[in-house]
Image 1 (cartoon, rainbow, N blue to C red):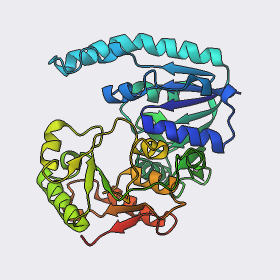
Image 2 (cartoon, rainbow, N blue to C red; image 1 turned 45 degrees about the vertical axis):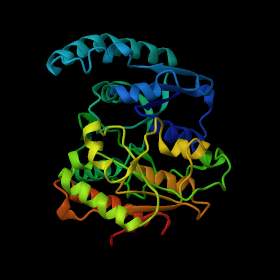
Image 3 (cartoon, helix red, strand yellow; image 1 turned 60 degrees about the vertical axis):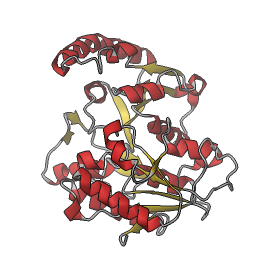
Image 4 (cartoon, rainbow, N blue to C red; image 1 turned 45 degrees about the horizontal axis):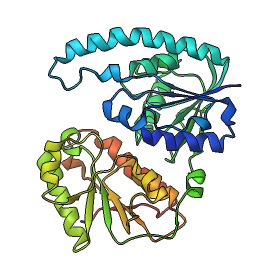
Length: 345
């Protein structure tokens, strides 16, 4: 029976490759739907997927969706255009899926996303099993929300307008406690990605820091920059490169560039480290990027690359203190010492 996989970012590709491998899904049964309603996601994915690994690849968004972005047109007008355009596109998607036949498993992500068409697909199409894979660290707050709704006696559980089935399998790098007795957890061990590592013993002496728009989302920008300067001091004379998150803009990086050298990449850091397109560092670090979890798992066979997460104090954060604390707790649960949470810096 067919399996549907939905993705929105290039990092999701690594997740679904592992899910398909660990759950024994055959290529001839696998259909891929590529969402990604942000221009940078579209650019990283569109036309860059190996079709030979799938029965069929369906790109939901097209260039026309982004046609008027960054043209100075008020967003209320571009929203009307996009809504009109994709009311027809969603109908075409449903007709395409109907050709594939009865769906056994839906592998999906981003229930917390604001991509309405991805959420509608989950609600409006029948499938026998749902497998949720990681979208960064969002698995942690999602599990908490499902657990809260379940404890409140809400049946069915509805999250972000998505009606969840009674049983979900979480395919995750995080050691989360499943929210309901009927749910399951399968740990993503990245076994398939390890097999792909080019020259597995080649590592350099650089330090990479995975950035994020923390100064825009979680704390004041001056606080974030102060933390980055403390991290630079922590590493002393080591050569440190700041790898920006895809959502950080030029203005945000101007101050960061005064602290670290900037290293811009155009693909997930995990993929670049696997295929050797990016020199492997001696230390990969960040505050709480999910790239730490994935990389620590993929390269768990060696001690030539250390993985460090710099701890953010709750008083430095303007929001989501509990969520971030749980992320650090999950780091400390992952095979003991694979990720070092650095509190003194």
